[in-house]
Image 1 (cartoon, one colour):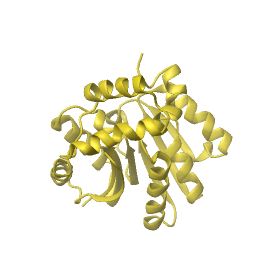
Image 2 (image 1 turned 120 degrees about the vertical axis):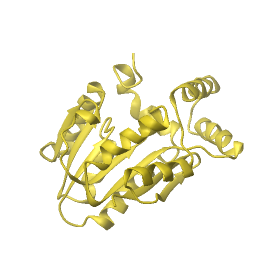
Image 3 (image 1 turned 90 degrees about the horizontal axis):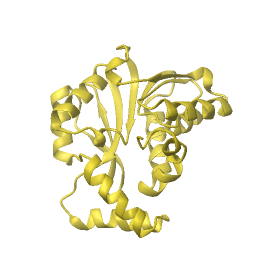
Image 4 (image 1 turned 45 degrees about the vertical axis):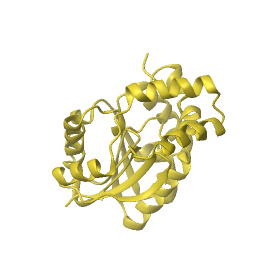
Length: 222
């Protein structure tokens, strides 16, 4: 079973907060930066919407924003839909289960893609993924993207492990996390991200949040 289905989907929010230091702050920083760019109505595509954490945070900062939530896991979207209903924002959110390439190419004011692209293997597939995103952005629209990044300093990766333990994970869980990450993650360096962005018609990434190996960047469609 996928880590995003069944019980894994139910436990996702508790697990991710231990894996990504500053997880909620990253969402709040994204929402705050978006609010500086989009003060009126905006349609926002959320790629890898998961259980809806990004949208719940965003919905509180501007009541005039509407959202399309895309995710490969129906179980995750089912949880998100319940949370949207409880928050009274269901009328502002449309959910789509499937690959981004299957979503019709409507133009959005902004796209949010947090903790998704590091799961995509290989530069070619990452480039195709960014092309799909870019084609759905209005000109001068913003992409807010965050991933586990590759750093040359070994101590940063070690600190990432130690931080997870401080967040409450035991040594066995940390060891399992390291094994999964080595298999599942394909991290980019900052230079690789810049090169991919340039190739698909996006601006140089501007970092607005970083917590050890996790980094969030804003890019503009040129």
